[in-house]
Image (cartoon, rainbow over all chains, first blue to last red; front, top):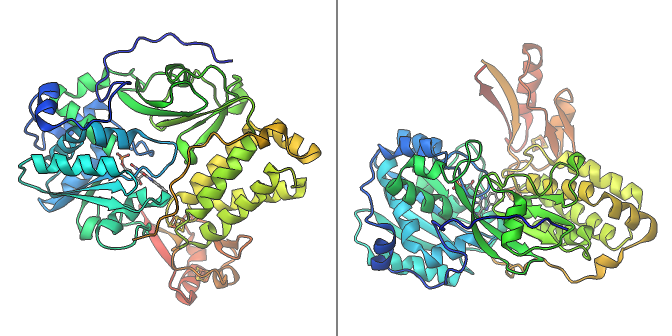
Amino acid sequence: MIEPVAFTQAEANLIPDDASWEPEDFAHHLARYGPVPTASPALIPEIQASGLKGRGGAGFPAGLKWRAVADRAGGRGVVLVNGVEADPTSGKDRLLMTARPHLVLDGALMAARSVGAAEIVVGVNRTAVEAHRAMAAAVSERREPVRIEVVGVPSRYVAGEETALAQFVSGGPARPTLTPPRPFQRGVRGRPTLVHNSETLAWAALIGRRGGAWYRALGSEQHPGAMLVTVAGACARPGVYELPCSASVGEALARAGVTQAQAVLIGGYFGTWVPMEPSPSMGGDATEPLGSNAGVILALPAASCGLAETARIMSFLAGESARQCGPCFNGLPALSSVMARVAVGRAGSAEVDRLRRWAGQLTGHRGACHHPDGAVTLLESALRTFEADLTFHLRRGACQGSRQPSVLPAAATEDGWR
Amino acid sequence: MKSRLRVNPIACDGRGLCAELFPERVRLDDWGYPIVDGHPLSPELMPLALRAVANCPKLALSLDTIES
Ligand SMILES: Cc1cc2nc3c(=O)[nH]c(=O)nc-3n(C[C@H](O)[C@H](O)[C@H](O)COP(=O)(O)O)c2cc1C
Ligand code: SF4
Ligand code: SF4
């Protein structure tokens, strides 16, 4: 049982809870947020002071990245907006790009002027048709001195990894490339490239208008600012919520009307399962602050089986390998097939030992990108969080819950790499 | 200035020659792909590291210099 947490819904800055998916045109955008400030390199210290962190998952400080690109771009840089959002649990980028396309553009334009970029590329998941249409319509409403292009990107999980996205919009396959160089060094067509999640840029657009101190004050000293969180799974009001970064997981769950859950998956398919019975030994509970990597929270109902759900996610992630690196194209299908046997109660303890050994072998950045690391993080958290269920499955076979329908959002059908 | 061994996982074909040549720093996973210990190399290990790099058939091994 999750304690109902009292919260006061402060006025939403990016998007209200009940936002319509109607794209906001330029005139209404200006009326809501005020004129687009003329950005310059002077905005970089403001972004740094704001404490804004990347909202694409890694939580890297935005200001540092702007600085690094500014040091290299010399007017020929590129701003690459990451709107791939191929994690089926997340919905905030689509919503933002559909309903507030001009805010994302403002952020990209300010970033371009600040770091010295002459070009903006907006990469949108091919399945996010409305977001693509809204971004393209917004671009056509603006007269800007930089080239802006909106590109549809294959709906593949790793296509949102920054080197994969940069390679794709440069004319190649949407597969990750070896680093270094990272995009800030050599990105789109070899140019220094600032890659940001669409939400990161939307916040930058507001920081440009209202200042770094304003953003910082939306959260706490330790967790400055605010963020969008997609809450999915077993909840009365699944959707995208704006919350302070200092808010707790429980507050996000309460907002979405989650009244009971045995565990939550924090951070999407690369995330960690956390039990909802507060238990410090298991590494977290609902009172933990959201921090910067909890853009998605999936609530697992009491009746479900966390092992079965994890097996489904592992199967998805194995299928999403770009099949370039041995540890990834061998390791993930192997983990997935044992996990599938665990889920149906057919695996023995020797197989689970092997699963743990493989998990150990596959972490530590063995692939060109972090796809294997993300999958292993998820798997290991499942083995910890659902330890009691694991014992049951090993001794007595599949539990009742494994026959429940999945609460995972449906994934898009497999796409190509071009 | 020190060096460390790195493998390019996209280029590597997992035949495991490196683990034979340089077992001090390379072991293989269950599929025969190298798990490289990325700690800085001591001067004594450098000749072995260089030999492994030179003999990798896929040019997938390299030495990274790291600022100490
Ligand atoms: C396999 C993989 C998939 C990723 N998918 C996305 C994605 O869909 N959207 C996104 O913004 N970042 C994604 N990222 C993170 C990006 O590589 C990059 O860190 C991010 O776009 C940077 O933007 P930010 O600084 O605003 O967070 C992914 C990373 C990995 C390893
Ligand atoms: S680790 Fe996997 S997803 Fe990442 S580049 Fe290598 S094969 Fe592709
Ligand atoms: S010798 Fe080269 S190609 Fe062979 S396993 Fe080692 S790194 Fe990979």
